[in-house]
Image (cartoon, rainbow over all chains, first blue to last red):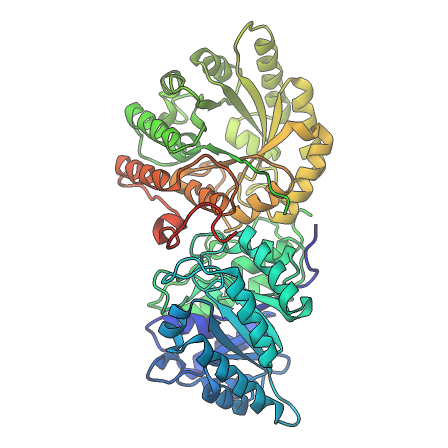
Length: 312
Length: 312
Protein backbone atom coordinates (compact mmCIF):
# COMPACT_ATOMS: atom_id res chain seq x y z
CA UNK A 1 0.00 0.00 0.00
CA UNK A 2 2.18 2.69 -1.44
CA UNK A 3 0.94 5.95 0.00
CA UNK A 4 3.10 8.81 1.27
CA UNK A 5 3.37 8.98 5.07
CA UNK A 6 2.67 12.68 5.02
CA UNK A 7 0.69 14.96 2.71
CA UNK A 8 0.81 18.74 2.54
CA UNK A 9 -2.67 20.08 1.96
CA UNK A 10 -2.44 23.37 0.10
CA UNK A 11 -5.60 25.33 0.80
CA UNK A 12 -6.68 27.34 -2.25
CA UNK A 13 -10.04 28.61 -1.02
CA UNK A 14 -8.99 32.21 -0.36
CA UNK A 15 -7.78 32.37 -3.97
CA UNK A 16 -9.58 29.81 -6.19
CA UNK A 17 -12.66 29.84 -4.01
CA UNK A 18 -13.15 33.53 -3.49
CA UNK A 19 -12.29 34.53 -7.06
CA UNK A 20 -15.26 32.61 -8.37
CA UNK A 21 -18.02 33.85 -6.09
CA UNK A 22 -19.80 37.17 -6.28
CA UNK A 23 -19.34 38.14 -2.65
CA UNK A 24 -16.18 40.12 -1.97
CA UNK A 25 -14.75 39.04 1.36
CA UNK A 26 -13.15 41.74 3.48
CA UNK A 27 -9.40 41.64 4.08
CA UNK A 28 -10.04 41.11 7.80
CA UNK A 29 -12.25 38.10 7.15
CA UNK A 30 -9.75 36.63 4.69
CA UNK A 31 -7.01 36.93 7.30
CA UNK A 32 -9.19 35.45 10.00
CA UNK A 33 -9.95 32.51 7.69
CA UNK A 34 -6.24 32.05 6.93
CA UNK A 35 -5.21 32.33 10.57
CA UNK A 36 -7.93 29.95 11.79
CA UNK A 37 -7.16 27.36 9.16
CA UNK A 38 -3.46 27.58 9.96
CA UNK A 39 -4.32 27.04 13.62
CA UNK A 40 -6.34 23.97 12.60
CA UNK A 41 -3.13 22.62 11.06
CA UNK A 42 -3.06 23.71 7.41
CA UNK A 43 0.48 24.95 6.75
CA UNK A 44 0.23 26.09 3.11
CA UNK A 45 -2.41 28.51 1.85
CA UNK A 46 -2.83 30.18 -1.52
CA UNK A 47 -4.06 33.50 -0.22
CA UNK A 48 -4.70 35.51 -3.36
CA UNK A 49 -4.16 36.20 -7.02
CA UNK A 50 -2.21 39.17 -8.40
CA UNK A 51 -4.50 39.92 -11.29
CA UNK A 52 -5.82 43.37 -12.18
CA UNK A 53 -8.71 44.46 -9.93
CA UNK A 54 -10.75 45.18 -13.01
CA UNK A 55 -10.75 41.46 -13.83
CA UNK A 56 -11.15 40.03 -10.32
CA UNK A 57 -12.24 42.63 -7.77
CA UNK A 58 -12.39 39.83 -5.19
CA UNK A 59 -8.58 39.74 -5.30
CA UNK A 60 -7.96 43.49 -5.12
CA UNK A 61 -6.36 43.20 -1.66
CA UNK A 62 -3.95 40.40 -2.58
CA UNK A 63 -0.90 42.51 -1.73
CA UNK A 64 -2.17 43.34 1.74
CA UNK A 65 -3.34 39.78 2.38
CA UNK A 66 0.07 38.34 1.48
CA UNK A 67 1.87 40.93 3.57
CA UNK A 68 -0.25 40.25 6.65
CA UNK A 69 -0.44 36.46 6.18
CA UNK A 70 3.37 36.44 6.12
CA UNK A 71 3.30 37.39 9.80
CA UNK A 72 1.84 33.97 10.65
CA UNK A 73 4.92 32.06 11.70
CA UNK A 74 5.16 28.67 10.00
CA UNK A 75 2.65 29.35 7.22
CA UNK A 76 3.73 28.98 3.59
CA UNK A 77 2.03 31.89 1.83
CA UNK A 78 1.31 31.11 -1.82
CA UNK A 79 0.19 33.63 -4.44
CA UNK A 80 -1.05 33.07 -7.94
CA UNK A 81 0.56 35.35 -10.50
CA UNK A 82 -0.62 35.62 -14.08
CA UNK A 83 2.38 37.58 -15.39
CA UNK A 84 5.61 39.44 -14.62
CA UNK A 85 3.92 42.47 -13.07
CA UNK A 86 1.81 40.27 -10.80
CA UNK A 87 4.91 38.29 -9.81
CA UNK A 88 6.85 41.46 -9.01
CA UNK A 89 4.07 42.63 -6.70
CA UNK A 90 3.72 39.21 -5.05
CA UNK A 91 7.48 39.06 -4.44
CA UNK A 92 7.47 42.56 -2.99
CA UNK A 93 4.55 41.63 -0.71
CA UNK A 94 6.65 38.73 0.56
CA UNK A 95 5.01 35.58 -0.85
CA UNK A 96 6.83 32.35 0.02
CA UNK A 97 5.81 30.74 -3.24
CA UNK A 98 4.43 32.09 -6.48
CA UNK A 99 2.51 29.97 -8.96
CA UNK A 100 2.00 30.87 -12.57
CA UNK A 101 -0.65 28.93 -14.50
CA UNK A 102 0.09 28.00 -18.08
CA UNK A 103 -2.94 26.52 -19.73
CA UNK A 104 -2.13 23.50 -21.86
CA UNK A 105 -5.17 24.39 -23.95
CA UNK A 106 -4.07 27.51 -25.80
CA UNK A 107 -7.73 28.44 -26.33
CA UNK A 108 -8.20 28.41 -22.56
CA UNK A 109 -4.95 30.33 -22.10
CA UNK A 110 -6.25 33.09 -24.31
CA UNK A 111 -9.60 33.11 -22.48
CA UNK A 112 -8.03 32.95 -19.01
CA UNK A 113 -4.86 35.06 -19.32
CA UNK A 114 -5.45 36.60 -22.75
CA UNK A 115 -2.10 35.17 -23.85
CA UNK A 116 -0.66 32.55 -26.23
CA UNK A 117 1.68 29.85 -24.92
CA UNK A 118 4.71 31.80 -26.14
CA UNK A 119 3.53 34.95 -24.41
CA UNK A 120 3.08 33.09 -21.11
CA UNK A 121 6.49 31.45 -21.49
CA UNK A 122 7.98 34.91 -21.99
CA UNK A 123 6.45 36.03 -18.70
CA UNK A 124 7.94 32.97 -17.02
CA UNK A 125 11.37 33.75 -18.45
CA UNK A 126 11.17 37.34 -17.20
CA UNK A 127 10.03 36.29 -13.73
CA UNK A 128 12.82 33.71 -13.45
CA UNK A 129 15.41 36.30 -14.53
CA UNK A 130 14.04 38.81 -12.04
CA UNK A 131 14.17 36.21 -9.26
CA UNK A 132 17.72 35.22 -10.16
CA UNK A 133 18.83 38.81 -9.58
CA UNK A 134 17.32 39.01 -6.10
CA UNK A 135 19.83 38.40 -3.35
CA UNK A 136 18.71 36.81 -0.12
CA UNK A 137 15.22 35.55 0.60
CA UNK A 138 12.96 34.99 -2.38
CA UNK A 139 9.96 32.86 -3.17
CA UNK A 140 9.85 29.47 -4.84
CA UNK A 141 8.51 29.66 -8.35
CA UNK A 142 6.11 26.94 -9.50
CA UNK A 143 4.86 26.60 -13.04
CA UNK A 144 1.40 25.17 -13.10
CA UNK A 145 0.04 23.25 -16.08
CA UNK A 146 -3.67 24.01 -16.07
CA UNK A 147 -6.30 22.21 -18.17
CA UNK A 148 -3.71 19.39 -18.24
CA UNK A 149 -6.37 16.67 -18.49
CA UNK A 150 -8.72 18.26 -20.98
CA UNK A 151 -10.41 21.56 -21.63
CA UNK A 152 -14.04 22.62 -21.75
CA UNK A 153 -13.21 24.66 -24.85
CA UNK A 154 -10.79 22.39 -26.75
CA UNK A 155 -11.78 18.96 -25.40
CA UNK A 156 -8.92 16.46 -25.08
CA UNK A 157 -5.37 17.80 -24.76
CA UNK A 158 -2.36 15.91 -25.97
CA UNK A 159 0.06 14.45 -23.44
CA UNK A 160 2.98 15.49 -25.61
CA UNK A 161 2.02 19.17 -25.26
CA UNK A 162 1.81 18.76 -21.47
CA UNK A 163 5.29 17.26 -21.43
CA UNK A 164 6.74 19.86 -23.77
CA UNK A 165 5.31 22.80 -21.79
CA UNK A 166 6.35 21.26 -18.46
CA UNK A 167 9.87 20.78 -19.72
CA UNK A 168 9.98 24.30 -21.16
CA UNK A 169 8.86 25.84 -17.85
CA UNK A 170 11.68 24.05 -16.02
CA UNK A 171 14.23 25.19 -18.62
CA UNK A 172 13.06 28.77 -18.22
CA UNK A 173 13.66 28.68 -14.48
CA UNK A 174 10.66 27.29 -12.60
CA UNK A 175 11.70 25.31 -9.53
CA UNK A 176 8.86 22.88 -9.83
CA UNK A 177 5.80 21.94 -11.87
CA UNK A 178 2.22 21.42 -10.74
CA UNK A 179 -0.54 19.60 -12.64
CA UNK A 180 -4.07 21.02 -12.64
CA UNK A 181 -7.30 19.35 -13.65
CA UNK A 182 -8.93 22.77 -14.03
CA UNK A 183 -11.98 21.32 -15.73
CA UNK A 184 -12.66 18.22 -13.64
CA UNK A 185 -12.07 15.95 -16.64
CA UNK A 186 -9.39 13.66 -15.21
CA UNK A 187 -9.73 10.02 -14.25
CA UNK A 188 -7.41 7.98 -12.02
CA UNK A 189 -5.76 6.12 -14.92
CA UNK A 190 -5.02 9.34 -16.75
CA UNK A 191 -3.71 10.92 -13.53
CA UNK A 192 -1.29 8.04 -13.01
CA UNK A 193 -0.14 7.93 -16.58
CA UNK A 194 0.38 11.70 -16.81
CA UNK A 195 2.28 11.92 -13.52
CA UNK A 196 4.58 9.06 -14.56
CA UNK A 197 5.30 10.64 -17.93
CA UNK A 198 5.79 14.14 -16.57
CA UNK A 199 8.03 12.98 -13.72
CA UNK A 200 10.22 11.30 -16.33
CA UNK A 201 10.28 14.51 -18.36
CA UNK A 202 10.95 17.08 -15.63
CA UNK A 203 12.58 14.91 -12.97
CA UNK A 204 10.93 12.93 -10.20
CA UNK A 205 11.63 15.58 -7.55
CA UNK A 206 10.19 18.45 -9.61
CA UNK A 207 6.56 17.32 -9.79
CA UNK A 208 5.04 17.11 -6.32
CA UNK A 209 1.67 18.78 -6.45
CA UNK A 210 -1.72 18.40 -8.10
CA UNK A 211 -4.76 20.62 -8.21
CA UNK A 212 -7.86 18.50 -8.81
CA UNK A 213 -11.53 19.30 -9.18
CA UNK A 214 -14.49 17.20 -8.15
CA UNK A 215 -16.72 18.20 -11.07
CA UNK A 216 -17.63 14.62 -11.93
CA UNK A 217 -17.23 13.24 -8.42
CA UNK A 218 -13.81 11.69 -9.08
CA UNK A 219 -11.78 14.21 -7.06
CA UNK A 220 -10.77 11.98 -4.17
CA UNK A 221 -10.28 8.91 -6.37
CA UNK A 222 -7.89 11.05 -8.41
CA UNK A 223 -6.10 12.10 -5.21
CA UNK A 224 -5.63 8.45 -4.34
CA UNK A 225 -4.19 7.76 -7.78
CA UNK A 226 -1.89 10.78 -7.51
CA UNK A 227 -0.60 9.69 -4.10
CA UNK A 228 0.13 6.25 -5.50
CA UNK A 229 2.43 8.00 -7.98
CA UNK A 230 4.26 9.85 -5.24
CA UNK A 231 2.46 13.20 -5.21
CA UNK A 232 2.79 14.80 -1.77
CA UNK A 233 1.03 18.17 -2.06
CA UNK A 234 -2.70 18.30 -2.79
CA UNK A 235 -4.70 21.46 -3.40
CA UNK A 236 -8.23 21.74 -2.04
CA UNK A 237 -10.75 24.37 -1.06
CA UNK A 238 -12.46 24.72 2.31
CA UNK A 239 -16.16 24.06 1.89
CA UNK A 240 -15.51 23.31 -1.78
CA UNK A 241 -15.86 27.01 -2.44
CA UNK A 242 -14.97 28.03 -5.95
CA UNK A 243 -13.71 26.70 -9.20
CA UNK A 244 -12.55 28.37 -12.37
CA UNK A 245 -14.86 31.15 -13.58
CA UNK A 246 -13.33 31.06 -17.06
CA UNK A 247 -13.92 27.37 -17.74
CA UNK A 248 -17.73 27.06 -17.87
CA UNK A 249 -19.16 24.18 -15.86
CA UNK A 250 -15.81 23.47 -14.26
CA UNK A 251 -16.62 24.52 -10.72
CA UNK A 252 -15.98 22.23 -7.85
CA UNK A 253 -12.64 22.11 -6.08
CA UNK A 254 -11.95 19.14 -3.88
CA UNK A 255 -13.39 19.85 -0.45
CA UNK A 256 -10.60 20.29 2.11
CA UNK A 257 -12.64 18.71 4.91
CA UNK A 258 -13.38 15.57 2.86
CA UNK A 259 -9.73 15.35 1.76
CA UNK A 260 -8.57 15.64 5.37
CA UNK A 261 -11.11 13.01 6.43
CA UNK A 262 -9.83 10.61 3.77
CA UNK A 263 -6.14 11.09 4.55
CA UNK A 264 -6.59 11.23 8.32
CA UNK A 265 -8.72 8.10 8.37
CA UNK A 266 -6.12 6.34 6.20
CA UNK A 267 -3.53 7.18 8.85
CA UNK A 268 -1.66 9.59 6.56
CA UNK A 269 -0.17 12.56 8.39
CA UNK A 270 -1.72 15.92 7.48
CA UNK A 271 -1.11 17.82 10.70
CA UNK A 272 -4.75 18.91 10.63
CA UNK A 273 -7.22 18.63 13.50
CA UNK A 274 -10.39 17.74 11.62
CA UNK A 275 -12.76 18.98 14.30
CA UNK A 276 -10.98 22.33 14.42
CA UNK A 277 -11.14 22.44 10.62
CA UNK A 278 -14.90 21.85 10.61
CA UNK A 279 -15.24 24.77 13.02
CA UNK A 280 -13.31 26.96 10.54
CA UNK A 281 -15.83 26.02 7.85
CA UNK A 282 -18.65 27.31 10.04
CA UNK A 283 -16.78 30.54 10.62
CA UNK A 284 -16.08 31.04 6.91
CA UNK A 285 -19.71 30.27 6.08
CA UNK A 286 -20.71 33.06 8.46
CA UNK A 287 -18.47 35.45 6.47
CA UNK A 288 -20.25 34.58 3.21
CA UNK A 289 -23.80 33.71 4.31
CA UNK A 290 -25.20 33.96 0.78
CA UNK A 291 -22.71 31.57 -0.80
CA UNK A 292 -22.84 27.77 -0.92
CA UNK A 293 -20.46 25.78 1.23
CA UNK A 294 -20.17 22.09 0.42
CA UNK A 295 -18.82 18.95 2.01
CA UNK A 296 -19.92 15.38 2.58
CA UNK A 297 -18.07 15.08 5.88
CA UNK A 298 -19.44 18.40 7.09
CA UNK A 299 -23.00 17.27 6.23
CA UNK A 300 -22.77 13.74 7.60
CA UNK A 301 -20.47 14.35 10.55
CA UNK A 302 -17.55 12.17 11.57
CA UNK A 303 -18.07 8.44 12.18
CA UNK A 304 -19.09 7.45 15.69
CA UNK A 305 -15.99 7.13 17.86
CA UNK A 306 -13.81 8.41 15.03
CA UNK A 307 -10.07 8.79 15.44
CA UNK A 308 -7.10 9.06 13.09
CA UNK A 309 -6.21 5.84 11.27
CA UNK A 310 -9.77 4.62 11.79
CA UNK A 311 -10.15 0.88 11.25
CA UNK A 312 -6.58 0.30 10.12
CA UNK B 1 -1.63 -0.03 -12.92
CA UNK B 2 -3.39 -3.03 -11.55
CA UNK B 3 -7.05 -2.63 -12.37
CA UNK B 4 -9.40 -5.34 -13.61
CA UNK B 5 -10.07 -5.19 -17.36
CA UNK B 6 -13.78 -5.58 -16.76
CA UNK B 7 -16.11 -4.62 -13.92
CA UNK B 8 -19.64 -5.84 -13.32
CA UNK B 9 -21.76 -2.99 -12.05
CA UNK B 10 -24.53 -4.36 -9.86
CA UNK B 11 -27.35 -1.83 -9.82
CA UNK B 12 -29.05 -1.73 -6.42
CA UNK B 13 -31.35 1.25 -6.95
CA UNK B 14 -34.61 -0.71 -7.32
CA UNK B 15 -33.86 -2.32 -3.93
CA UNK B 16 -31.56 -0.16 -1.81
CA UNK B 17 -32.74 3.04 -3.47
CA UNK B 18 -36.48 2.52 -3.44
CA UNK B 19 -36.64 1.00 0.04
CA UNK B 20 -35.39 4.22 1.56
CA UNK B 21 -37.63 6.76 -0.10
CA UNK B 22 -41.25 7.49 0.75
CA UNK B 23 -42.64 7.20 -2.76
CA UNK B 24 -43.79 3.69 -3.68
CA UNK B 25 -42.89 3.04 -7.31
CA UNK B 26 -45.39 1.00 -9.31
CA UNK B 27 -44.38 -2.46 -10.50
CA UNK B 28 -44.63 -1.27 -14.12
CA UNK B 29 -42.25 1.61 -13.48
CA UNK B 30 -39.80 -0.64 -11.65
CA UNK B 31 -39.78 -3.02 -14.59
CA UNK B 32 -39.36 -0.21 -17.07
CA UNK B 33 -36.42 1.08 -15.04
CA UNK B 34 -34.87 -2.40 -14.93
CA UNK B 35 -35.44 -3.03 -18.64
CA UNK B 36 -34.09 0.36 -19.69
CA UNK B 37 -31.02 0.06 -17.54
CA UNK B 38 -30.37 -3.44 -18.88
CA UNK B 39 -30.65 -2.03 -22.39
CA UNK B 40 -28.10 0.65 -21.44
CA UNK B 41 -25.72 -2.20 -20.60
CA UNK B 42 -26.17 -3.01 -16.90
CA UNK B 43 -26.30 -6.81 -16.65
CA UNK B 44 -26.89 -7.32 -12.92
CA UNK B 45 -29.68 -5.63 -10.97
CA UNK B 46 -30.86 -6.11 -7.39
CA UNK B 47 -34.55 -5.74 -8.08
CA UNK B 48 -36.15 -6.08 -4.67
CA UNK B 49 -36.07 -7.20 -1.07
CA UNK B 50 -38.16 -10.08 0.32
CA UNK B 51 -39.02 -8.43 3.61
CA UNK B 52 -42.52 -8.26 5.10
CA UNK B 53 -44.67 -5.58 3.47
CA UNK B 54 -45.41 -4.18 6.90
CA UNK B 55 -41.74 -3.23 7.26
CA UNK B 56 -41.02 -2.03 3.71
CA UNK B 57 -44.22 -1.44 1.70
CA UNK B 58 -41.99 -0.18 -1.15
CA UNK B 59 -40.87 -3.79 -1.64
CA UNK B 60 -44.31 -5.43 -1.46
CA UNK B 61 -44.16 -6.46 -5.15
CA UNK B 62 -40.69 -8.06 -4.96
CA UNK B 63 -42.03 -11.47 -6.03
CA UNK B 64 -43.71 -10.09 -9.14
CA UNK B 65 -40.73 -7.88 -10.01
CA UNK B 66 -38.32 -10.82 -9.83
CA UNK B 67 -40.64 -13.05 -11.86
CA UNK B 68 -41.04 -10.47 -14.63
CA UNK B 69 -37.41 -9.26 -14.60
CA UNK B 70 -36.38 -12.90 -15.12
CA UNK B 71 -37.88 -12.68 -18.61
CA UNK B 72 -35.14 -10.22 -19.62
CA UNK B 73 -32.68 -12.49 -21.36
CA UNK B 74 -29.13 -11.92 -20.14
CA UNK B 75 -30.00 -10.07 -16.94
CA UNK B 76 -28.79 -11.41 -13.59
CA UNK B 77 -31.72 -10.83 -11.24
CA UNK B 78 -30.62 -10.35 -7.65
CA UNK B 79 -32.88 -10.31 -4.61
CA UNK B 80 -32.12 -9.37 -1.03
CA UNK B 81 -33.45 -11.86 1.49
CA UNK B 82 -33.45 -11.22 5.23
CA UNK B 83 -34.31 -14.78 6.29
CA UNK B 84 -35.35 -18.30 5.25
CA UNK B 85 -38.92 -17.37 4.34
CA UNK B 86 -37.77 -14.50 2.18
CA UNK B 87 -35.21 -16.75 0.49
CA UNK B 88 -37.84 -19.40 -0.24
CA UNK B 89 -40.04 -16.82 -1.92
CA UNK B 90 -37.15 -15.32 -3.89
CA UNK B 91 -36.11 -18.77 -5.09
CA UNK B 92 -39.67 -19.60 -6.11
CA UNK B 93 -39.91 -16.30 -7.99
CA UNK B 94 -36.80 -17.31 -9.89
CA UNK B 95 -34.02 -15.02 -8.64
CA UNK B 96 -30.60 -15.73 -10.16
CA UNK B 97 -28.83 -14.69 -7.01
CA UNK B 98 -29.96 -14.14 -3.45
CA UNK B 99 -28.06 -12.00 -0.96
CA UNK B 100 -28.47 -12.19 2.76
CA UNK B 101 -27.02 -9.35 4.85
CA UNK B 102 -25.38 -10.21 8.12
CA UNK B 103 -24.51 -7.10 10.05
CA UNK B 104 -21.09 -7.24 11.65
CA UNK B 105 -22.42 -4.86 14.26
CA UNK B 106 -24.80 -7.01 16.29
CA UNK B 107 -26.59 -3.87 17.49
CA UNK B 108 -27.28 -2.97 13.87
CA UNK B 109 -28.31 -6.55 13.12
CA UNK B 110 -30.93 -6.36 15.81
CA UNK B 111 -32.14 -2.97 14.54
CA UNK B 112 -32.09 -4.01 10.87
CA UNK B 113 -33.21 -7.66 10.94
CA UNK B 114 -34.29 -7.93 14.57
CA UNK B 115 -31.85 -10.83 14.97
CA UNK B 116 -28.62 -11.73 16.76
CA UNK B 117 -25.62 -13.03 14.80
CA UNK B 118 -26.48 -16.62 15.76
CA UNK B 119 -30.06 -16.20 14.63
CA UNK B 120 -28.93 -14.84 11.24
CA UNK B 121 -26.41 -17.66 10.88
CA UNK B 122 -29.23 -20.14 11.56
CA UNK B 123 -31.22 -18.61 8.69
CA UNK B 124 -28.18 -18.96 6.45
CA UNK B 125 -27.78 -22.62 7.42
CA UNK B 126 -31.45 -23.30 6.65
CA UNK B 127 -31.30 -21.50 3.29
CA UNK B 128 -28.16 -23.40 2.27
CA UNK B 129 -29.77 -26.72 3.25
CA UNK B 130 -32.90 -25.85 1.32
CA UNK B 131 -30.84 -24.90 -1.74
CA UNK B 132 -28.82 -28.11 -1.53
CA UNK B 133 -32.03 -30.11 -1.85
CA UNK B 134 -33.17 -28.33 -5.01
CA UNK B 135 -32.36 -30.22 -8.17
CA UNK B 136 -31.67 -28.32 -11.37
CA UNK B 137 -31.49 -24.57 -11.66
CA UNK B 138 -31.11 -22.60 -8.46
CA UNK B 139 -29.74 -19.22 -7.47
CA UNK B 140 -26.30 -18.35 -6.22
CA UNK B 141 -26.27 -17.56 -2.54
CA UNK B 142 -24.15 -14.64 -1.37
CA UNK B 143 -23.59 -13.78 2.26
CA UNK B 144 -23.13 -10.08 2.69
CA UNK B 145 -21.19 -8.57 5.59
CA UNK B 146 -22.90 -5.27 6.25
CA UNK B 147 -21.56 -2.49 8.52
CA UNK B 148 -18.19 -4.15 7.85
CA UNK B 149 -16.26 -0.89 8.18
CA UNK B 150 -18.01 0.60 11.17
CA UNK B 151 -21.49 1.19 12.48
CA UNK B 152 -23.45 4.32 13.30
CA UNK B 153 -24.67 2.59 16.44
CA UNK B 154 -21.56 0.71 17.66
CA UNK B 155 -18.79 2.80 16.07
CA UNK B 156 -15.70 0.82 15.03
CA UNK B 157 -16.07 -2.89 14.32
CA UNK B 158 -13.28 -5.36 14.80
CA UNK B 159 -11.64 -6.95 11.75
CA UNK B 160 -11.52 -10.28 13.56
CA UNK B 161 -15.33 -10.37 13.81
CA UNK B 162 -15.60 -9.60 10.07
CA UNK B 163 -13.24 -12.49 9.30
CA UNK B 164 -14.98 -14.88 11.67
CA UNK B 165 -18.46 -14.11 10.33
CA UNK B 166 -17.26 -14.29 6.71
CA UNK B 167 -15.65 -17.63 7.32
CA UNK B 168 -18.75 -18.91 9.15
CA UNK B 169 -21.04 -17.91 6.25
CA UNK B 170 -18.86 -19.85 3.82
CA UNK B 171 -18.87 -22.91 6.10
CA UNK B 172 -22.64 -22.78 6.32
CA UNK B 173 -23.01 -22.89 2.55
CA UNK B 174 -22.77 -19.41 1.01
CA UNK B 175 -21.10 -19.48 -2.39
CA UNK B 176 -19.49 -16.11 -1.96
CA UNK B 177 -19.09 -13.19 0.40
CA UNK B 178 -19.73 -9.51 -0.19
CA UNK B 179 -18.43 -6.60 1.86
CA UNK B 180 -20.70 -3.64 2.60
CA UNK B 181 -19.83 -0.20 3.90
CA UNK B 182 -23.45 0.33 4.94
CA UNK B 183 -22.62 3.44 6.92
CA UNK B 184 -20.18 5.20 4.60
CA UNK B 185 -17.39 4.95 7.19
CA UNK B 186 -14.72 3.21 5.10
CA UNK B 187 -11.50 4.69 3.77
CA UNK B 188 -9.29 3.33 0.98
CA UNK B 189 -6.62 1.95 3.33
CA UNK B 190 -9.22 0.11 5.40
CA UNK B 191 -10.86 -1.21 2.23
CA UNK B 192 -7.57 -2.60 0.98
CA UNK B 193 -6.60 -4.09 4.30
CA UNK B 194 -9.99 -5.69 4.88
CA UNK B 195 -10.22 -7.17 1.38
CA UNK B 196 -6.72 -8.67 1.69
CA UNK B 197 -7.51 -10.20 5.07
CA UNK B 198 -10.93 -11.50 4.09
CA UNK B 199 -9.68 -12.97 0.82
CA UNK B 200 -7.07 -14.87 2.82
CA UNK B 201 -9.79 -16.08 5.18
CA UNK B 202 -12.50 -17.14 2.70
CA UNK B 203 -10.42 -17.77 -0.42
CA UNK B 204 -9.41 -15.30 -3.12
CA UNK B 205 -12.18 -16.40 -5.50
CA UNK B 206 -14.96 -16.10 -2.91
CA UNK B 207 -14.81 -12.35 -2.31
CA UNK B 208 -15.57 -10.44 -5.49
CA UNK B 209 -18.03 -7.71 -4.64
CA UNK B 210 -18.31 -4.58 -2.53
CA UNK B 211 -21.21 -2.33 -1.68
CA UNK B 212 -19.93 1.13 -0.84
CA UNK B 213 -21.61 4.34 0.18
CA UNK B 214 -20.55 7.89 -0.60
CA UNK B 215 -21.65 9.36 2.73
CA UNK B 216 -18.34 11.18 3.30
CA UNK B 217 -17.48 11.59 -0.37
CA UNK B 218 -15.00 8.70 -0.46
CA UNK B 219 -17.16 6.28 -2.46
CA UNK B 220 -15.23 6.30 -5.72
CA UNK B 221 -11.84 6.47 -4.00
CA UNK B 222 -12.92 3.33 -2.13
CA UNK B 223 -13.94 1.72 -5.43
CA UNK B 224 -10.48 2.41 -6.79
CA UNK B 225 -8.89 0.84 -3.71
CA UNK B 226 -11.21 -2.19 -3.98
CA UNK B 227 -10.36 -2.70 -7.66
CA UNK B 228 -6.67 -2.57 -6.81
CA UNK B 229 -7.34 -5.55 -4.53
CA UNK B 230 -9.05 -7.50 -7.29
CA UNK B 231 -12.72 -6.74 -6.65
CA UNK B 232 -14.70 -7.10 -9.88
CA UNK B 233 -18.33 -6.43 -8.91
CA UNK B 234 -19.31 -3.00 -7.59
CA UNK B 235 -22.77 -2.07 -6.31
CA UNK B 236 -24.18 1.36 -7.05
CA UNK B 237 -27.50 3.13 -7.30
CA UNK B 238 -28.81 5.05 -10.29
CA UNK B 239 -29.12 8.71 -9.38
CA UNK B 240 -27.65 7.86 -5.97
CA UNK B 241 -31.15 7.07 -4.82
CA UNK B 242 -31.33 5.51 -1.41
CA UNK B 243 -29.23 4.32 1.46
CA UNK B 244 -30.00 2.35 4.55
CA UNK B 245 -33.06 3.59 6.45
CA UNK B 246 -32.01 1.72 9.59
CA UNK B 247 -28.55 3.29 9.89
CA UNK B 248 -29.25 6.96 10.59
CA UNK B 249 -27.21 9.40 8.52
CA UNK B 250 -25.88 6.61 6.33
CA UNK B 251 -27.66 7.52 3.13
CA UNK B 252 -25.77 7.91 -0.09
CA UNK B 253 -25.06 4.98 -2.35
CA UNK B 254 -22.39 5.43 -4.97
CA UNK B 255 -24.01 7.00 -8.02
CA UNK B 256 -24.08 4.52 -10.92
CA UNK B 257 -23.56 7.25 -13.54
CA UNK B 258 -20.44 8.59 -11.78
CA UNK B 259 -19.10 5.06 -11.31
CA UNK B 260 -19.63 4.29 -14.99
CA UNK B 261 -17.96 7.58 -15.93
CA UNK B 262 -14.92 6.74 -13.81
CA UNK B 263 -14.53 3.18 -15.10
CA UNK B 264 -15.37 4.02 -18.71
CA UNK B 265 -12.96 6.95 -18.79
CA UNK B 266 -10.25 4.72 -17.30
CA UNK B 267 -10.78 2.32 -20.20
CA UNK B 268 -12.22 -0.41 -17.95
CA UNK B 269 -14.94 -2.45 -19.66
CA UNK B 270 -18.40 -2.06 -18.10
CA UNK B 271 -20.57 -2.81 -21.13
CA UNK B 272 -22.55 0.35 -20.35
CA UNK B 273 -23.40 3.11 -22.82
CA UNK B 274 -23.09 6.16 -20.58
CA UNK B 275 -25.33 8.38 -22.70
CA UNK B 276 -28.06 5.74 -22.68
CA UNK B 277 -27.60 5.42 -18.93
CA UNK B 278 -28.04 9.16 -18.40
CA UNK B 279 -31.29 8.93 -20.36
CA UNK B 280 -32.48 6.19 -17.97
CA UNK B 281 -31.83 8.53 -15.05
CA UNK B 282 -34.14 11.10 -16.60
CA UNK B 283 -36.81 8.47 -17.08
CA UNK B 284 -36.52 7.23 -13.49
CA UNK B 285 -36.62 10.80 -12.19
CA UNK B 286 -39.91 11.24 -14.05
CA UNK B 287 -41.29 8.20 -12.16
CA UNK B 288 -40.40 9.74 -8.79
CA UNK B 289 -40.69 13.50 -9.40
CA UNK B 290 -40.75 14.35 -5.71
CA UNK B 291 -37.57 12.48 -4.84
CA UNK B 292 -33.96 13.68 -5.15
CA UNK B 293 -31.79 12.22 -7.87
CA UNK B 294 -28.07 12.92 -7.55
CA UNK B 295 -24.97 12.69 -9.68
CA UNK B 296 -21.96 14.83 -10.48
CA UNK B 297 -21.70 13.55 -14.06
CA UNK B 298 -25.41 14.05 -14.63
CA UNK B 299 -25.15 17.64 -13.37
CA UNK B 300 -21.95 18.60 -15.17
CA UNK B 301 -22.37 16.58 -18.35
CA UNK B 302 -19.66 14.55 -20.05
CA UNK B 303 -16.36 16.18 -21.03
CA UNK B 304 -16.25 17.86 -24.42
CA UNK B 305 -15.47 15.25 -27.09
CA UNK B 306 -15.66 12.47 -24.48
CA UNK B 307 -15.10 8.86 -25.43
CA UNK B 308 -14.19 5.69 -23.56
CA UNK B 309 -10.60 5.55 -22.31
CA UNK B 310 -10.46 9.36 -22.41
CA UNK B 311 -6.93 10.70 -22.25
CA UNK B 312 -5.24 7.34 -21.78
